[in-house]
Figure 1 (spheres, rainbow, N blue to C red):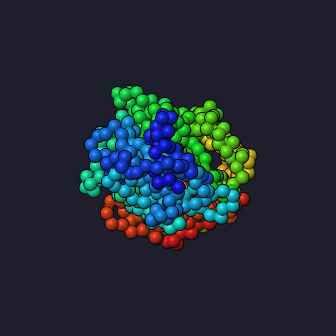
Figure 2 (figure 1 turned 135 degrees about the vertical axis):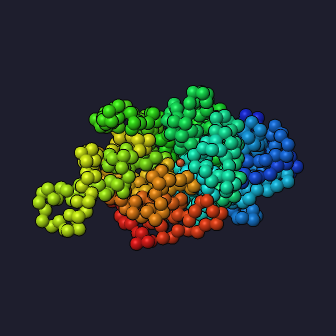
Figure 3 (figure 1 turned 90 degrees about the vertical axis):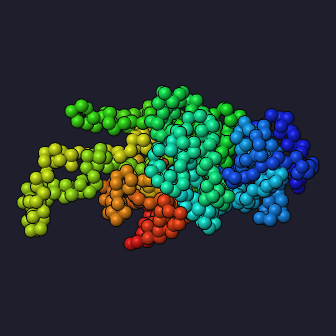
Length: 593
Ligand SMILES: [Fe+2]
């Protein structure tokens, strides 16, 4: 095997392949000493991603001495951590035009094989990373860590450290919000200065140089570097890689005075493809690449990475627009819009691709890895519109129930119940009674609940091909498990949603104290029939074990992201499972039960 291959490197250059994205084909030939290597260090770590049966993307970023136009870097791939059993060594260029990021598609590898890799400059060798290729044919197991929403100023990346600490990890699924675009005083930055994690740059990200700088800051984090070194990542972006609550042609956090949105989006996506180990659909990074793609883990799992955010999504619906000036709510119009078949989340091209990918798969499990919650989370109207808290809704609901029983002459009412009713009856105003009677509505129109017609189309794909469907979701900063049901309430599959790495969740949004987490979780689950589990207050990861018989999700939570030291909250860990052929959640095991 060649240690260094000058001929191939030169031919890549002559062919005009981007130095950022060079391909190696095994076996190679030729020879060259390391004398040509440039001078630089690896302060942003290494990474691998997008493994196929015979290839994997390797990534690093060189911090050069000075500001050369380009410098030459080497990489090694071996079967052992000492790099004695070398598979390939090769050279490529890190270029200033690509922020000195190096991304290599190593080809000609063996299926289902673990590899070690590293990068070298003249004066430095990177850390060693672990990666693998996808197995072909029979496979009995797959273990993945599933993550989303890492906000650097919001807290330490202990969850990434836990990824590195997870035994026998095959893949890491990152479901988006790998970075956040806000300036130093933006979302969830209240503690940033105290914990030494003020956003860099300090202003909101708008241009290519801004996005690059933010990735560079995140990638100096040693816990994130450890996670990348541990296993190959499969990544999809969510909104914050560009701007909050984005759709195809705009975002909530973008205004006209911030410039042209499509230019901002292109800059953000270019930085994404430079800094992350994802295989681009174009080697010229000025061309926009799609990120929906497929990974086949033998005949066990077909992993379908979706883009529900930037590819074809229409602008989200806004609950406020359904209220009239007198406070009336136009429910009919809301559901007409939700069920409008013209409104899209994936877009026709991506949906057609998804159908083909499911139709042609012989894998036991179809895993849809994507951003936003797919399960139907309809909350009581008063709660969804934040006119009553969950607690207030429960108390008033109790009073209304007692009043109803009394009016019906229920002889089983106890003295205590009658006293409670007498004490609270004043609260049961006409307005409150109307609020309590109003039918539930979706709590988040930015999620699949706001795109009901297209959700049914996805469910139809799963039903038409009798898929064992497991949807994996991020975005909400909270852990969830849902039974997925079509419009006629037929079971279609299940959804496992991961919490966040550091972004605050419902506890911050709803002001829930830690001692009320368990009661709030029980309250929400009781209000939403298909929902079987939610964690409202902890940061963590989901570890997914896939076997021919079952898919099992294990949620693990850290004690704090605001303290440098942390422990795992074993009493908050939860396990849930779906068995092949059942399409419903099978069991729940609460460690604190
Ligand atoms: Fe997020």
